[in-house]
Image 1 (cartoon, rainbow, N blue to C red):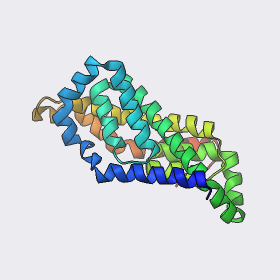
Image 2 (image 1 turned 45 degrees about the horizontal axis):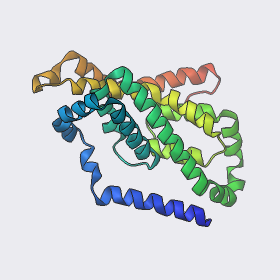
Image 3 (image 1 turned 45 degrees about the vertical axis):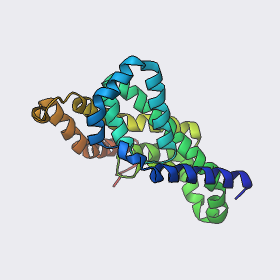
Length: 231
């Protein structure tokens, strides 16, 4: 590993360590957000542009460094911004963050992995070069594989960074919409009686059934394009 790579890796390790040392994750839970929701919405209304920039920066940094809390940030976006604005912000922030994570992992690890295991990865590389966009779309659409794992695995392949970006944005869009919509409904709760409101119940039903719907949709797409079942 080259000197610049070691320095960059060290900086990433330090940033991730600081996140856990200062227990910043305590601010990324639903209970804390509900307690602070009025104050957060007030900040957004008073400093709209600055708040949006700060939200995007934090979300991108968390995604790029593979820190936990993206789900809560997505729900919070729905509660604070509403569905249309929240969906746009989270869609771009999550995709930019994922692309940065892919770029970092590629810069730090791909050459070493390819040099060491290149003879075993030949057929995989060929498959990714031919159908990499489809495989990435499949992984993004069906959220069975963790977000950061997809970023790391695809970083070690020859997929083009621009392809990684646009396929990720499209593939994550439906899931992002489901989470942002659920956050919008949570943000409208004023009392426990609102927990059983039809719109909130529907939002959480969508959260539960989305992986199954996505898998069936992916199977239909794969059959249409001759890929076979996704398993």
